[in-house]
Image 1 (cartoon, rainbow, N blue to C red):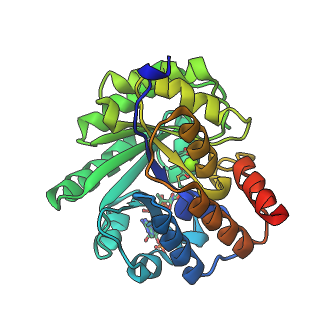
Image 2 (cartoon, rainbow, N blue to C red):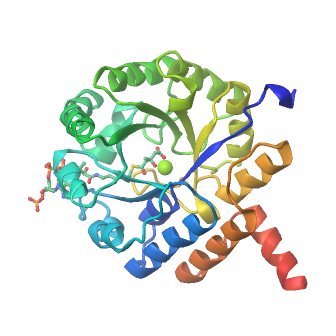
Length: 305
Ligand code: HMG
Ligand code: MG
């Protein structure tokens, strides 16, 4: 059975962005930079660093420029940032991201709460951002939030997901991220949503982004592997959450995913011990132990040795 699974998985560590955006206390800029450095040291080759959003909406990301310009970049690492509109894109451009992310939603209610416009208006805003980015040779990824359920609307159907997938494709987005913002998806429903993305984008340009609120994320990733999807977002230490999706907890922890993939013989290029070091580091900064099971287990084993 495992012969049918992908042999290599690309993990995008979204810890510095999704992981920290929801932290109530300001995280020092130097700590965000150090986290990125530790992730790249551990072998992460895709890192979502920050977002160029309104500092009134998400104060934690207000130091986007300082973080991006403080990085010691490594060859072969792709640094991505979120840009909701042209203002954000223009600010980001000065900091030379390798990739930008436009983020929409499969639910109208969440779109309004998160980015203050309807789905259709968001696509109108994204279109010039996508064109400008591609004109500069910057890759454009999209995220479709609430693809498995919405904190305001409730159920979200695969048809609603595919509607936004089509819209993203129509404006020239190159990669389609299917996001379970509130972690309510279960494997078969996740496959149904992913299949809609796979109708419009090749497998290498479809990814899953699973918050682990209900403990389903690893099962959902496995279900995606069965479809040939081999790109996933994950967050070091299991940090994360969206300020506009109350009650949603962190992303699936990168170290939990790496542990599972190591066991399946699927390569990621990421060193589990280095990742746990990064999780321990950022946990120390925010003053909470990592929620990730693997980080806790590895740290307990180290403490006992
Ligand atoms: P708006 O209020 O409708 O925007 O917000 P506006 O164009 O009317 O501008 C209002 C003010 O914001 C103005 O400033 C603009 O200059 C400023 P003022 O005149 O009041 O001083 N502004 C900006 N400032 C900095 N950067 C910008 C920017 N744009 C306008 N780019 C907006 C619309 C999109 C800006 C706002 O709703 C916003 O910032 N939302 C961000 C929401 C967010 O970051 N959510 C979390 C990330 S998404 C996520 O976590 C989900 C994901 O992980 C996948 C998943 O799990 O589902 C990706
Ligand atoms: Mg998220």
